[in-house]
Length: 414
Ligand code: AMP
Ligand code: MG
Image (tube, rainbow, N blue to C red; front, side):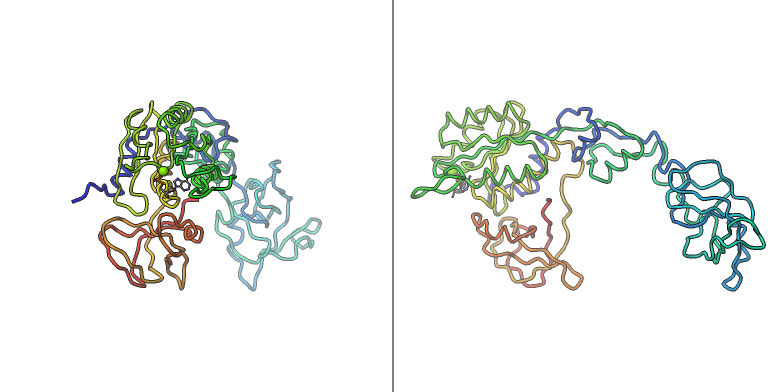
């Protein structure tokens, strides 16, 4: 008997409440990290012409059929092709052309022999008493060492699918075929506020019973490192009026609002009351550890996420719930980094009941993933988080685990 929601169901509820921002036209140089709002098709092909994949000699493969290790073949060298040179040039039977990587294939040639498989370039011979020649030591098949026109991208090929993110390879590919701008979803502007009368601003010295507000800088940093434009709404006292004002400002002036603290039902926990009054906000008790109490909903159409105040809880909920929600708001198709199986590096004692996200150090040892917990797993113990690079996700119904037990893990999505 519990009103706890399984974490995946809670995450699905959150995602169902988030819609992408309206797309905009973006110059390619500003598109890094953005998701395409529709398919982008190639209007040109890549490579734009047949060209050599190596430094060597462009030849006619049919000339080389009789070559054996004991019997190389001497061809007359009729020209030289540096990259960028597309002047008229023809390779006829008995001829070769010096060619560099990326240079257009001369007419008549259908293969390139690597320079390493040639010899005695330049020596005159019977075949060519006046001109330069080269000795070819190996046969070649037609098409060898040639990059065909359009082999990477054909005209009409899909360069980006809807929701696909522009990373450096996508950027390079789009530029290579002449795309100058795309329709993309902008990144949401994310506002962050923290609450708690026990907190002092990050730079201040705490008095008796006080601690520094570390969640707000940590959350702002988690956003900034992923490129989201941020707005720092500051440290808000546990006061309904002040919190109402800050939440409304955040909801009106940004595309996503994060609050920290006050999400439980304590006397001084105002966040859930204020959010419930201002919008359609659900209080969720999620069957996970850490991060059980959470709030999510819309205030004036803007998604608002109420994160728990415990420092580790707020970051775990950020990673597993907020980040996928932000990606959805940013129009992205892939919302979750993959889970993969690892083996526990040591025993782990636990009570069944809630899915547990333990901070682990993931590494490959002797060819297999090992997950070692990084120390005390309390929801306030940030120090064990600093030693981790991922989570092991222990299903709600599992009890004690032993060294070598299989666990599903996720490397942090950094
Ligand atoms: P709350 O969710 O407001 O009940 O806070 C739970 C715990 O997290 C308390 O021990 C708080 O002092 C602590 N806490 C809340 N907000 C922050 C914050 N911004 N930075 C560091 N610790 C916090
Ligand atoms: Mg509080």
